[in-house]
Length: 132
Ligand code: ZN
Image: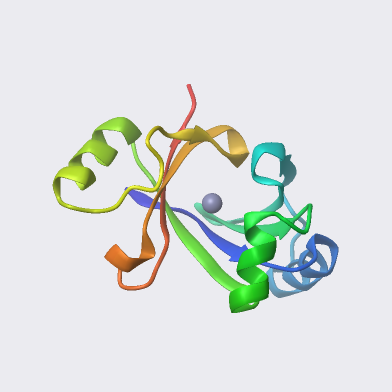
C-alpha cells in the first residue's frame, strides 16, 4: 500500500487549480469530470503521489454539500492496493464500515471504495486499484 493521492474539497476548480499550480509550481497532470459523482477532479503529480482537487459540478453534488457543511479542505486520503475486493473483505471482517457495497469506477481509471471516517479517527479513507 502507498498513498496514491490526497483529496481536497474545493468550491471552484479554476481558482483552486491556480492556487495549487503556484504552491506546487507545476501544471495539473490531468483534469476529469466524474459525471456519476457530479465532481470535477484536477490532479497534480507530486512524486509518486498526487493531489486531487474535488470541485462540485452541480449544487446537489456530494462535494458541494461537504464544502457547505465543513468548508474547503482535506476530504480524503487514498491508498492504492493490489486487490481492492480482498482488502474490502478484510476490512469488513475487521469491523470497518465500507461505504460502497462494490467498488465503483472513480477518476483516473481506478476502482475506488471508501471507508467511513468514524472508523478512521476522523479521516475518510479511499482504497483504489488501477484498472487493468
Ligand atoms: Zn480520491
